[in-house]
Length: 64
Image (cartoon, rainbow, N blue to C red; front, top):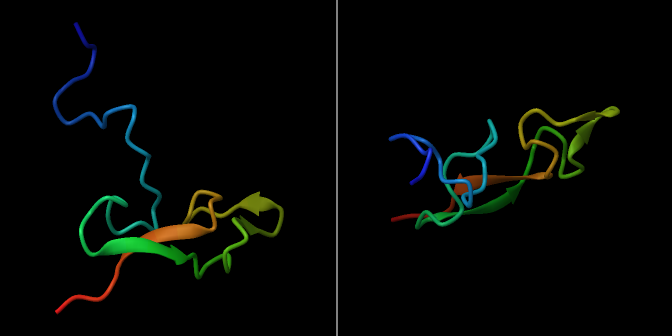
């Protein structure tokens, strides 16, 4: 039996960061360089709060 409650994010799913617009597996979404930290993952000596230190954000790409 699982301790997971309705609405919980499955543990095997990557956590979204504040700058992410969608899950990576969402059709029409892909990785882009974080504009806040310019892809470094850091602002000064601290982890970028927008990308969570990854240097990338998941954004909508293209579309018609």
